[in-house]
Structure formats: C-alpha cells, structure tokens
Amino acid sequence: EVQLAESGGGLVQPGGSLRLSCAASGFAFRSVSMSWVRQAPGKGLEWISSISAGGGVLISYADFVRGRFTISRENSKNTLYLQMNSLKPEDTAMYYCIEGWKNTSPPRGQGTQVTVSS
Image (cartoon, rainbow, N blue to C red; front, side, top):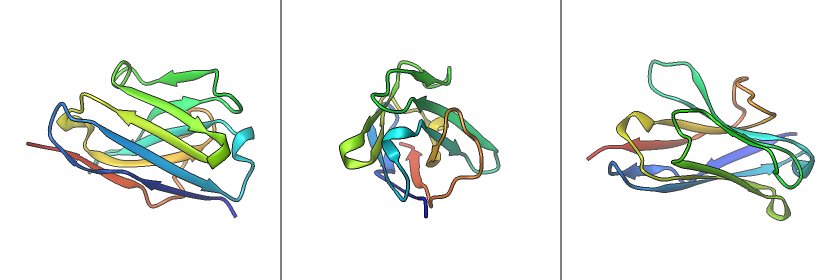
C-alpha cells in the first residue's frame, strides 16, 4: 500500500523558512517522480514542484515559488523534501506530497499545515 506522510509545517512569520519532509513507503520511491502540491482554504489543489525519478536531474517549479522553494529527494531514506524560504502570507496552505510528475490528483496523505502570519 502506498503511504505518504508529510511533516515539517508550522506557523512562521513572513520572510521565514520551513523545510517540509515526505516519508514514502509501499512503492519503489527511487523509481518514481515526485511532486509537492498545496491547497489553501476555499481553493483548489495547486501544483508547486516536481522532481524526476532516480537522481532527480529534472526539476520543475511553479512560477509563484521559483527562486524561493527548493525540492529535493533522498532515495536512501525514501524521503522527499521541500525547502521553503522567503515565505509569504499567500503561501499559507495545507501541503502534500504526491507521486508522479506535475500530478494534481487527490493526495493520499494527511498533509502538513503551513501558516505564514505575523
């Protein structure tokens, strides 16, 4: 059974940073592209970033996070990361990881809440 468990969210002031983690199990993590998506209250699911399988040579970001967020993966730990810097109030959302490239299917995990507020 595919399981994805997000963690690392919290309350942070504008301009602050957070590092999200996604622990994956139940599938060959190394062989699968992975993505981060988010959902703000009252809004639809929004794709943030994707990283290719294996060494993660291919990476793509949504325009609204490019230069602020960095996606990475550690295959030996079956873990996906999202380093988020220069956070803005509009980044407030529930963040999810999902398998696949630019996948916006309904997430499997519970997500981790990120709140950016002073």
